[in-house]
Image (cartoon, rainbow, N blue to C red; front, side, top):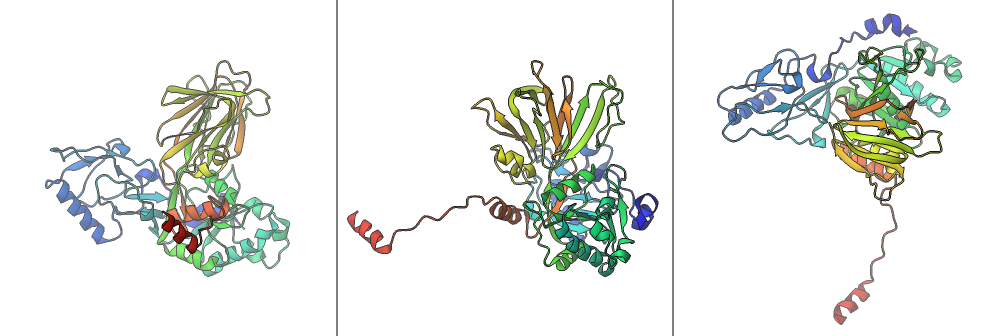
Length: 476
């Protein structure tokens, strides 16, 4: 069996990645000469003189122009506004908070191609197509634990990936500890070829080209938690109970996997939340929860700081206490309200169909750049859920008059207590999760609403017989 500690880097042969917003493994071309010609035409329309522009997302440390190919690292940029009349040499450029434009990489090899044709670019979900800079060679297979019904699909998939596609398969070590897999002699030769890893111990973020999930929505959330930075494209098969986030059926998995490996698949970019928890030092032996820690302790006053990437929601609740929770919510430094009730949910558009929907929030398409704030059983009839723009920073703290502490969890995991002096900062992450679609982002989402949540399902109203309609017209 291939051990992650010894052989995973050598086996995969995947180069180390840098920040996904400012790195790529290829020259900045959109795969065809037509795209380069379009950029040159756009340059002529904007300015006959070849003016160069600064990228504010990269702090202005590089300049580029429309009519020259860019060597080295590809940049992820979005044009935030059209140039002012009479001045076309310079205009503000910002990194997109949600949709990539024109190229964003996911994992070592995958990226989304787009065709930027206008200065004011509004993300079209149908334009998001997955392609590969190089053919993918390593795949992470995530299987729902303690589910005997998934053993046979798991074995079939792994054998197919290894023998038919000659791919390197990564699995979590505890998956192979299942007695049904340990006692299967026929699966033994395949099992020895796996590269294994352990959650909280091994970092595989630079080794995986794409991910395949077998199970329910929880497998996709688990895959998100494994990657605190750039996430490889995720292909999720519906083998669980709900399957809102898992659109693929397993019956024809061979052809579907082949289509993804060959490229040209639709993807939906599910934004995540970057959550930073800062705690007052209380105990020298306080355990540091799994997350992207910032050197363990903050330099300001020795506070403990932890960071998480969240796909669905951050839930702050009253925990086991019988008292109402009492927390203050700040938006960009301004106190906007105090939540008195069972708690508050801060969710992504993907999470709007999860806990937030049960608490009365609107369901928002994942391509909408927004953050939802939803109270849980508020002690106020006028406290309605709100939607704020993606990119704002929310900060949540215990109110000074709170009678008890609060508890926070991230996608239902890493639950921990929040006390006076602690703070939770939440904003939109620059690392979305690219989820591969069966059809397209819009069709898949509404299909999930209908099939999983039975959205707007009711008996149709019976129409009037034709003779009655004619009689009504005569009477009128």
